[in-house]
Length: 216
Image (tube, rainbow, N blue to C red; front, top):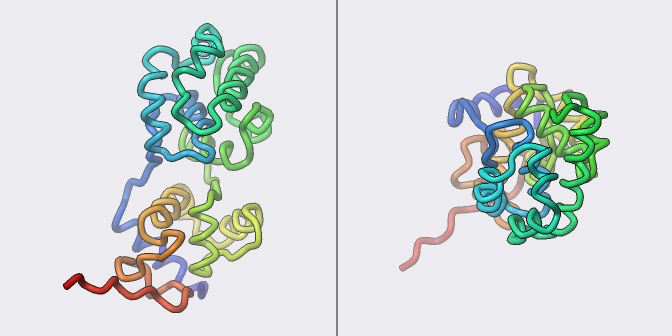
């Protein structure tokens, strides 16, 4: 993507969605951390269904610990890899209580030290809960960055580093959400919906996908 196209690319996405946010449901930084931890290889819809049951019962680190592993597993058993995620969440809650006064830390190093929390999860929490200018590169952002030519890279870290350099500062706080939503609903994996794309004129992808033939 040509450098002069980047600002209008994001300006167009912003005009269509001025206040983007995560589709995970949460009310506190801990609820967000929990939801993101549970979301690996799972849909936001599936995570929200589980946390709508879990959070009214236990939505703090101590409450999760008091709930116990078996009951936690029961609440999240509809989510893929729920046993591993439950174990990691219990360990994370113990660390939050013992080392952070039950609060979610605000540094990348402390977040990444939590079981089940990698760079992507830390970036989401820093961005969404604390307003940091971070970019959590998931499969959607990785695809959009490469396909459009915005920030091509062979792995998620390379794409993240290029995005941090190429995204104009005025768009940085919300770029994560715009790119995820664009990848989730328009620039989809198998057949990108180019005929619905508002930023098609800035995109390097060729050939553009034609609209599906009208049914007779």
